[in-house]
Every structure is written in C-alpha cells, then in structure tokens.
Amino acid sequence: MSTRQKPEPFHPDLRLARWLPLVSAGPRTLWMFRLSPPGIRPVSDTNVDTVPFAGPAGDMPYRVFRPLDAATPRPALLWIHGGGLILGTPQQDDASNLALSRELGIPVFSAAYRLAPDHPAPAALDDLVAGFRALVERADEFGIDPSRIAIGGASAGGGLAAALAQRLHDEGGTQPVFQLLVYPMLDDRTVLRDDIDRRHLRMWSPESNRYGWSAYLGTDAGAPGIPSSLVPARREDLSGLPPAWIGVGTLDLFHDEDLEYARRLEEAGVPCELRVVPGAFHGFDAVFRNAGVTRAFHSEWARVLREAFARAGTA
Image (cartoon, rainbow, N blue to C red; front, side):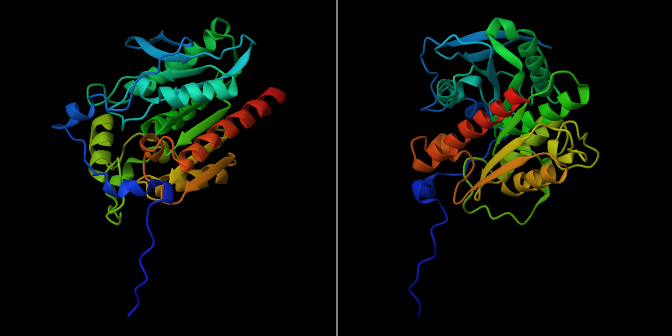
C-alpha cells in the first residue's frame, strides 16, 4: 500500500490558510461583514489625503496618495476597492496603494462608490464613471497627465474596473490606458455552476457570490436578460478596450471566469497578460501581506503599470 501523501493544495507560503473558515455573507449577516476587520487600518502619512469627488449622489470621499517629489505631469492610477459589491471602503487598500504611489512615483486615487443592496446597479458604476471624468477634468489640480490614467481594482473592484473600461469605451472621450484586474469578479453566471470544488475556497464563498451579485443586480444572479452593461463577462464585443493584466489564484472562486475573460480579450485583439498563482485563494495577498508570494504578486502590479505608462508616454 502506498504511503505517499496527497500534494498540499495551498501554496507553500499560504499553508496556514487551511485553518481559515469559509463564512458567507447574506442579508442577515451583512452588518457583521461591514464591520472594520481587525488588521485593516488606514495608514497615517502626510502624503495621504481624503478628497471629495463629486458624484451623481453627492460628494464621494476618495483617498489620494501623492508622491513625495513634485515633478509633473505624471501618470495616475484610479483604484477601486473590493467587497463583493456590498462591502468595503477605500481605506482597506491603503497599504498597497501607498506602496504603489511610492514605488512608481505616481498619485493613486482610491475611489468610493455606493454599495448594494442599498444602492443597486448601476449606482456604483455611475459613481466611478463620474470619478474618472472628474479626475480627467481636475488633472491640472493633481499634476497628472490625463492621457496616462490607468484603472484597476481587486475582486469586485476589478470587476467594476472592467465594467468602467467598457462604459468609457462606449461613451467616448478620454480613455484609461490600462486595466489592472486583480482576481476580478466578472460574471454573475458563475452562481449557476454546480461543479465547483469548495473544499479549498477561502474568503469568498459561492453563497456570498450569489448574494453579492443578486443584491447588486436587483434580481437573481445568473438570470437571463441581465444587461451586459452591468456584468463585464456578458459583453459580447471586447474589442477596443485598454490593455489588461489579470491575476488570479488556482483556488479562487473566480479562477475560471477570469481565465475565460483573459482569453476573450486576447481573441478580441486586446493585449492581456495573465498571471495564475498556484495554490492561491481569493484575497490571499490581503490575508498574508508579508508572504513571498504576495510580494511577487504585488511587484507584478508595479511592473505592468510602469510598462503601460511608458508605452503611453511614447505613443
């Protein structure tokens, strides 16, 4: 009889994840999930400000990370926080946003937007469109080059970034130069799958996914007839969108939908670099911030943004 052990499903840097519980968000537990998680604290830095950005429902408090030197104009990143479309604040990504601002020497604008179910779609997307337009209009105020603004986000933020790129493309005007999509939440139809192995899922469950999408869409996730303008993966024509980078782990609920979106972008003629992290679960970099696999993952964000800005600067 063989005594060979089964391979560890988690990345060696993430082995402690085996002890993380998989808890689901729903209408009765949403209030608990909206409490500030321990370990998520806004950074205290003289170069971080809260700045009001006008939106359809009034001013939205953006977190703005300014580089130390005063050279202008410079590129910028509009970052969109995650939270399944029902949770989250700009402050939750302070550490990584500050690191990107320092490493790349660019301003990073962490957007606020209205959350479901209190504000169903397209409220969040309307807020982000207004925020991008305002950033372009206020470019001189912030010392940025409006022709070199990238957009990005993690999880639901990545999905909203993809939806934002699509809508800006359709509306015309100034366009983002790049999409940084970190394990993005792209397709509500994932809730219809019955073949998902949930044994090693962490941080975001199929039940949470169903509730988040349904709360956002105002109807059952996966239902026919949902407008493609609200769900990035439902859009048939992906041509003409900005180049993208998609990063996702093999143990992420969004793994398959992310790989499919990357494939479709390439098929449509949109350059898309795909990074798949073996043994990584959803939000692994937020849980294990100092792990080697996290540092490597975040270094790719800086690399692809630097390359995108350089390409835009020579266009």
